[in-house]
Amino acid sequence: MNRILYILSFLLFANTLAGQRDFTLGEAVAYAREHQAGLSNSRLDQQISATEAERLERTWLPQVSASTEIRYNPILQTTLLPAELSGGPSGELMEVQFGTAFSSSLGVTVRQKVFDPVFHLERELRTISRERAELDEAFEREKVKLRVEAAYYQALLNREAYQNSLSLLDALEKLVQDVRIQVENELENPSLLNTLNQQYRRQQYQAYADSLNWRASLAGLKLEMHFPAGEELRLTDSLRLPMSDTLSLNTSDNYDIRNYNLQLEESRNALDRLDRSRLPSVDAEGYLGAQFFSQSPDLYNFKRWYGLSYIGLTASLPIYDGQDRRYGAQIENLKMEQVRNRMQAYRIEQENKAIRASLQMESARAQAALARQAIETAGKNLEMARFNYQNETTGFEPVFDALQTLVDSRGQLISAKGAYVQALLDARLLDL
Image (cartoon, rainbow, N blue to C red; front, side, top):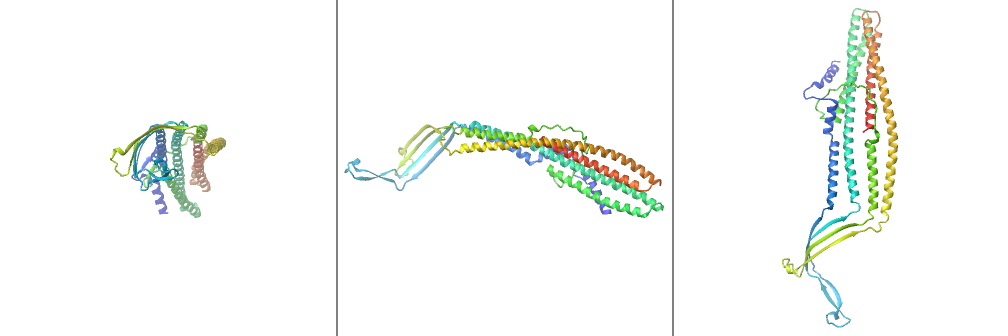
């Protein structure tokens, strides 16, 4: 028994150890946001989107490339020509070799995009990507907040349950002392003292289990906050919920709806790109260079270098693609229909969830009001029962019953607070 009491005392005062950190609910949320990898990645996604947009814009700058090559032709091309071209007899052929053993080239090519039928649609796609990155960051921030709030409230609820167990343990200890005095004065049956001692030991184990639940919920909060497991953490807020929040939700612009709209925009963009891909793309190209031809690899013989240049436009017009655009458009239209179906089902689901959360919150308020009234009544009944028992006007059973009712009512209040917190967090999740 002493071992259990020692462990309970250690768990109760563990947060007073050196190196502890105090956190209000707001501070816990801020800490989690600062150390959340998902938020950092969302901000990096925004940077990636901005960089991709800048990269797309720069495709309109001239593209300059240099090229060079050197070749050795050990076997020159042989062609048969009519012999009469060189004064030979008619009807005969002669062998003629073309080319030189060594050739080389140097040149600079400049390409400039003139017309790209899908460029502005590619720009719109980058804008959609940036909006999605911003939306993801905002959603991640709120999601971190809700997860930390849920863990923080759970820790407070478990701490309150543990304190309730300790309160019952203390009350049982006082009852044991009262009954022991009565037994010593031969005014009470010793079996009652044995029963109370057994109840006291059971409550010690219950308090120990509640303390472990409390510590486990603290570990869960550290997990959500990305807080070092080896450091002590103390919660400075209390579970004084007003439980009077009115449910005001606007699910028409939450994360999922906006994400669905972005998906529709992407599909519309894809349809426009398929349609405009029928148009030609036009590029301007210029080349300036020189070529070398010789039977020896004397590249410094500038008489063997011959200039070469050209300027022109290249237009590429797709003629037949095997109906790829047609099937692509069909796929995108089917995707849009899927998104619209999901949006419709989602709105109906959100409406029902909002009604359910509102009713659950109202039910939790009613349960909490009943529990508070029961606590007040049970507290008065306990005082009266103990007074009557000490003055030998009644037996012990009313005392124990009143104590058990008080503890049960406190537990019901904790459960009502837990139900309210869960419904409140569920409602806020609908509005993200």
